[in-house]
Amino acid sequence: MRKILPICIAILAPIVSLQAQDAQLCKLPASLEQLKAKATEASDITLPYNMLKMAGNAINKDNTNEAEAQKILSGIKGICVHSYKFDKDVQYNEKDVDALRLEFSDPTWSAMVKVRNKKNGENVDVLLKTERGAIAGLVVIVAKPEEFTFVRIDGSMDLAQLAKLGGQFGIPKLDMSVQTKPAPKTDSK
Image (cartoon, rainbow, N blue to C red; front, side, top):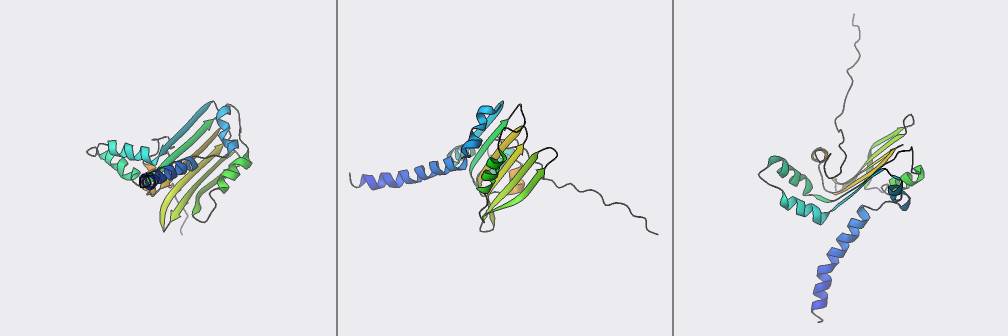
């Protein structure tokens, strides 16, 4: 019996640790979690590492698109999406959204996109986590008057490849292209 206990602990410790990480991955502040009750449309998607690994194993490697998806998912440890739509404007407190943003303010996280539009009330944050010079996480927070969306992806990833996952697994499709305006014509005399 004494020999079995350390073996059981050694086996169970990583499982308990992964479950704790999965719970933390999708944790919203309680005030934002309550938005689900006010929403006319709610989506809560959690894809922890073990589910992603099973999905990766089920992919047809002979299909080019599926093989590419497997390559993208291979470094991902978890995906979490909370998306709530409302009939009425602004069902959340901006201070609660700021508190959520603050959770991603340590030195490993940096803001890639920060949009504040006072005219239409749309606020968008895209934050990247880097470890040893590589991308190790992505957070997207979209706070519109009639919608609140939080997406978190943990694990190593390539942003160009990750953009291809948009529209799948509950991940919003993001336009990552940069559009430039042509330079104004000048008269040269």
